[in-house]
Length: 404
Image: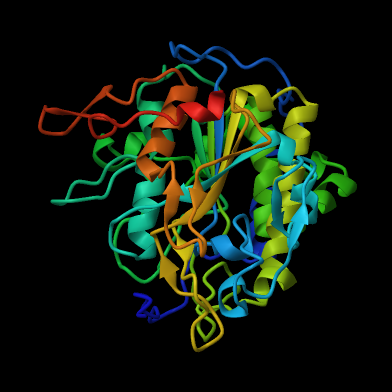
């Protein structure tokens, strides 16, 4: 089966190695005498029905395999079930992959959606559009990221950026299409705040303080993982704690020439063994620590945490020993923000090839995030030509079972 990727001509310029990321984060040039506002009550910034609502979107760039992560099929042949075994979680009856031992101990905090799917073209870029905006881009219209749309509807009177993107934007993933990671037709004014584009915008003291990872104990930083994803998840917690309302964390910025979830099995992509050797443990440490810290600080109830890839992987292992793109079925995790943890919503068929019941779409996930902020997905957004368009297609609503 073709996997619809193409190799970039050059290595993406904005990909951050850990030492590059850490050098950007301390912001020591701003001085140490700034007001320390981290932990201070954030000023009300919106007229939302849920004024304390926040969200962290963990985009697992590359598309994790449902069969090797959160929807394992141990009774199927080896070419379907793959090399990993299921383990028990702290919720009776729920099992996940052995590559997530720490996450397994936090299962009471999150819900697993096992019937995610979409019918658009199976390329990374389009999947990113769907997950970050709830729509596929057509006729040259670029829809705004959920966090950017929420920022547009918020008051402009705030001390911190409304929406922060870490550690940097997605670059080439093979389709040469927009990824849905900025404000689109709303305009650059509502683009997410990034380290690369910050410049003098870091002069609010609360923002600079929140970015000071050096203030965290070494044990905490090690718990999250000493890598860009782990550091970004820790920064996300600090930013949410300081008053930022939406944080998007890209686990990777490309799928080429590095180890990611994109396990086609041959270069420039990753082998399936990388799930157990590096990618799985990287996610496991950061995600479990994030949930644990948010809960311990009393923030999880008001902070929705969404962890998902842009699609799943083929049920049958390919000739290279990997799995190709498969938007017909995948799994994702949702926690916090009033979501009831310790449950599974939807189910796949015997080989995790298609939803068996409660098919769920990225647009419904977007509606659920908007619902978490008290926003009706039918809310109209203004376009440059003076017309308006609803946040999501008519009839799309939140996943009500999550809150049952």
